[in-house]
Amino acid sequence: MTYVITQPCIDTMDQSCVDVCPVDCIHFEEGVDKMLYIDPDECIDCGACEPACPVSAIFAEDDTPEDQTRFLEINKLWYADKDAARAKI
Image (cartoon, rainbow, N blue to C red):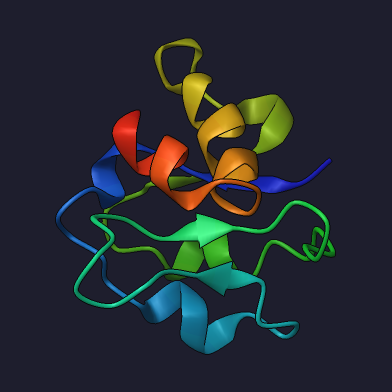
């Protein structure tokens, strides 16, 4: 299981989650991206990011609300093809 960042992060991009991540698995390109992304291969499932998010945009993969599950794919895709992921936002 990994964590995923979802829709509430779009245009908010509060970086409190980045500050608490012990493995630095949350990334974005400043001035380009509209949200933050969690690398599913680097995430150690510690959960530190979830309570740090002031807009409740982060969920454990298995707890992601049904209407936000598309962000599981988008977070993974960003690490393979940033432009394709951005097009889905």
